[in-house]
Amino acid sequence: MKEYSTIDLKRMTDDMIIKAIGEYIRSIRLERNWTQKQLGDRAGVHRTTIRDLELGKRSTLLTLIQVLRSLDQLQTLKNFKVSKEINPLELAKLEIKERKRASGSKSNQRPKTSDW
Image (tube, rainbow, N blue to C red; front, side, top):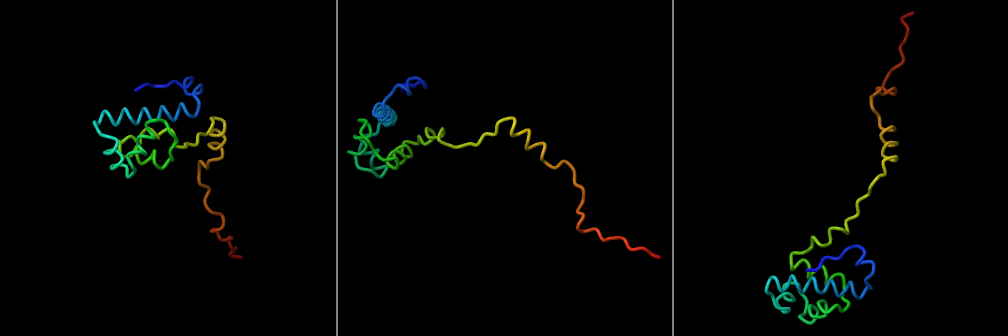
């Protein structure tokens, strides 16, 4: 399988990327020695859908997910996970505001009455 650099991917058209995805699916299928029909049956799609996907024809995301799941290749989608990162300055500001000590609740204290 060919590995693409970020520069390669930026230079590729949408259709070229779709074709690369199809080539990836085809290579995994052939590694497993599965026919297009076998993969289609496992993914719950028709053989012609697998053929079109491998040829770089447009397909739905649902089909892609079904095929990747059938090939046990869902890990290829791990880069789509959104993780919120805080820049160091914002983190420092949050740490300053974070309570370091407890002062006790003032609302629970009763005013002292005098014995006089």
